[in-house]
Length: 192
Ligand code: UDP
Image (cartoon, rainbow, N blue to C red; front, side):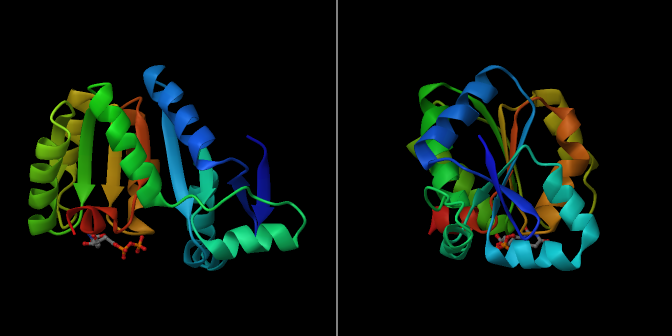
C-alpha cells in the first residue's frame, strides 16, 4: 500500500477488507509481519517519545485506528479510505484462523480475562490451535518467548496496552515468522 504521513507516522492507505486479505497472504507465506493499529493517543505519544516513534517506524503496517486520523488525512488532502480498528482486524483474523486451522498465541490482559478468552476461543473457533494464552502481568518473559519460539504460531496477539505491546513485539518478532499485532483492550472487549 502507499502510505499517508500524519505527524510523522506513515498510515497504510487501504480498506479493512484489502488490508486483512493482504495480511492473510503474508501469514500463509510465513512472512514476518508487525502490524500496529494507531489511534490519535499513540500518534501523540510517539511525538513525545523518540524511542517509541522508532518502534512504530519498525512496523510493516500502521492502520488508522481512529476517526481523528481519517479526518486529519482528509484535511491534508491525502485521504485514507476508512478507519480500521485493532478489534476489527483481531476478529476478522480469528474467523480466518478458524477456517484455516492456524496456530495462535494470545498474550495480555488480566488472568481472569485471558482464561475466559481461551475458553471462548475454544468454543467459538474449535479449529484454531491455541498454542498459548498468557496474561499480561508476567514478571519474567522467558516462558513466553520460549513458548513462541517452540510453537511458531501463525498469529501472535499482544494485548498489554501501548507502548508495552509494541516494544515487546519489536524486541521479539524475530522468534517466529508470523503476524505480530498489538491489540490493546481487545481481549477485554472480546470476552465482554
Ligand atoms: N495490560 C496488561 N499488562 C500490563 C498493563 C495492561 O496485560 O502490564 C492489559 C490490560 O489488562 C488491558 C490492556 O492491557 O487488557 C490495555 O487495554 P487498553 O484499552 O488500555 O489499551 P491501550 O489503549 O492502552 O493500548
